[in-house]
Length: 195
Image (cartoon, rainbow, N blue to C red; front, top):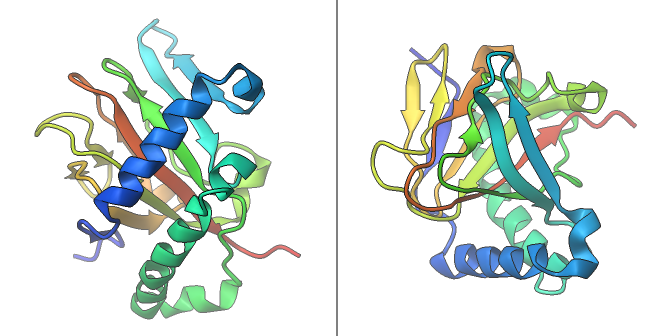
């Protein structure tokens, strides 16, 4: 049965993944950059951790100095083109990837454990159609997978692997617990052009 999830293993080079992690780590310790860092930490009503990670957006000027955002958009273009060939009904939505490139680090015992989907967060997310994610580092087997609820599928993080899926409620997912080392991803959305 079709699950609408596409995976391109090892598509992004080790060099780009490494460069992205290095730039991210240098920026999050820079006191001049503190207003651009997003600390995501939530808890369930029972007190257990729902989400714990740090993120920043790739379209910030410090990323663009190295043209990292442009590199990601170039790589993703082939993926979204293939995705649209598989699901041509999306071709007429005017998809755009503007201002949705984000780098995220999850430390050991963290993760995004809440079941969620990408159109549900806030009003700005309603236009999201396709979600993409790139794993920037390898994680040991059995930890930090991306789990899809209804598809009953888990994807193991391997460096440079691109994943795309629908942003709607059919693809509720979560990040499983990180245990041994930080997990890094690049992520974003192709959204409907609402202009």
